[in-house]
Amino acid sequence: LDAVMSEDDLADFLAREFPEARGISVERVTEAGLVARMAVGEGDLRPGGTISGPSIFALADVAVYLAVLSRIGPVALAVTTNATIDFMRKPAAGVDLRAEVRLLKLGRQLAVADALIYSDGQPDPVARASMTFAIPPAR
Amino acid sequence: LDAVMSEDDLADFLAREFPEARGISVERVTEAGLVARMAVGEGDLRPGGTISGPSIFALADVAVYLAVLSRIGPVALAVTTNATIDFMRKPAAGVDLRAEVRLLKLGRQLAVADALIYSDGQPDPVARASMTFAIPPAR
Amino acid sequence: LDAVMSEDDLADFLAREFPEARGISVERVTEAGLVARMAVGEGDLRPGGTISGPSIFALADVAVYLAVLSRIGPVALAVTTNATIDFMRKPAAGVDLRAEVRLLKLGRQLAVADALIYSDGQPDPVARASMTFAIPPAR
Amino acid sequence: LDAVMSEDDLADFLAREFPEARGISVERVTEAGLVARMAVGEGDLRPGGTISGPSIFALADVAVYLAVLSRIGPVALAVTTNATIDFMRKPAAGVDLRAEVRLLKLGRQLAVADALIYSDGQPDPVARASMTFAIPPAR
Image 1: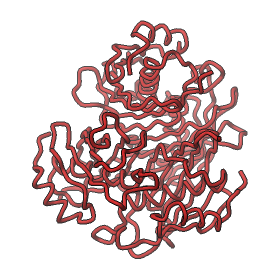
Image 2: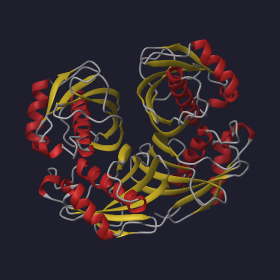
Image 3: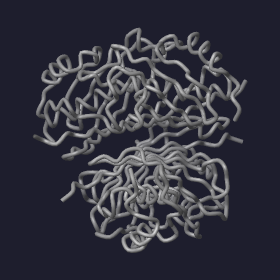
Image 4: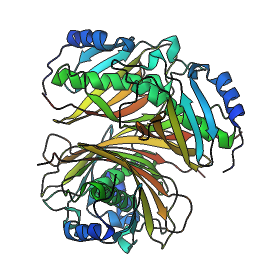
């Protein structure tokens, strides 16, 4: 499906509707979906320099949401109904996280996508997430 | 399995090892597992008064972790390997969240549990989570 | 939600619409959902007497489906959209499986439920499943 | 990780250890993992020509299992501990299913992979599965 929102459109939407997602940005809208990144802050860290599970979840959730919106437009009311995450490796300390999202289904009621999460510059993913979003009926 | 850590033991552990889990507390160690609660703060809210998905994830993750520790003792190195969450209803605004954890398996390598998350005082759960933790080999 | 189909209604529906689910039967419609059982046959076994993962999946899928129908009536077109299973223990050889289903949400578009699967007569569950069904729009 | 079992090795293993997986075959060991296929038989069908969920689950489970073995050798005791499937589209009637497996982690204790399942010749996946296997300690 062709993108209907550009990187700039998504950045504007994010700043306006999700001010709390500070630190997350869209790197690139791709053919498969989208690449997002998260600047890791103090609040995302756990003892030993690990990044917290909720922070990884937050990146996956926002990145998949933006990937869906990039194809269907700024539907602020789409909501996550199911999320599954496999935490596979310890993230590297002191580097950003990148999420590579792949859209798998964009139906009228449900959208499905998955994401691989990387410590920036590392070859192996730290986590894998799949998400389902419910899309509100068109008005 | 009998509990080896009390509510107070778990509160001490949480304060010492997870200062960032401020707002989460153990209400009661139960026969099935444990009940925890989270005081919802400004940072947990989304426009419209909804509680953010990452905050609900954080409560589920910490609550299940504490339920596992309540049976095996303070093993700080247990890590979440898989988490699945179904978001089912919009949380009520302005009230705490409660997590009722049910331990399903405590093996030598893996622990499995699930949790129902409620807006305090509401009869229907807002979310359901299941989690797997990897337990490090005993030394 | 009150049940609108009895054990006999569900047995009739199953025989008529799912003849391939031979071996699965409804033991009891419960307040939380439903209890179903599966007579384990030769085709369900793996070397060593274990029951195959697909057979456990089939029981969970049919049991949750019937639990949903017990509340909304015989909607043959409801379809599974997401299934998550944790396989926790080796099933006992030569005994039936029981599935205890708990309905968590019955919305207009989505139904969510989970199930614990037991080897009949054993106290600890062999598997835990959660399922989401999409319910077709009423006509 | 380099493959240590060829397509022929895997076919021999499958015939010897999983005679009940008749109908499933390895098409190709790939750099990312493996491609398997399943000849859809009468027993896999549901009314309307749909392929049953348990049959799709069985293909995903065996395909991921073989992908893991292709890298670590014929460890018959590896067991599925977690499986998550999103059913996204109705499979086409009368055609084989293909599973494209991507290995994401091969640790000492756990292996994680996901698979996209296609109706042969169709561009969009009918299902997405992720699986975790526990690998028994080396002797």
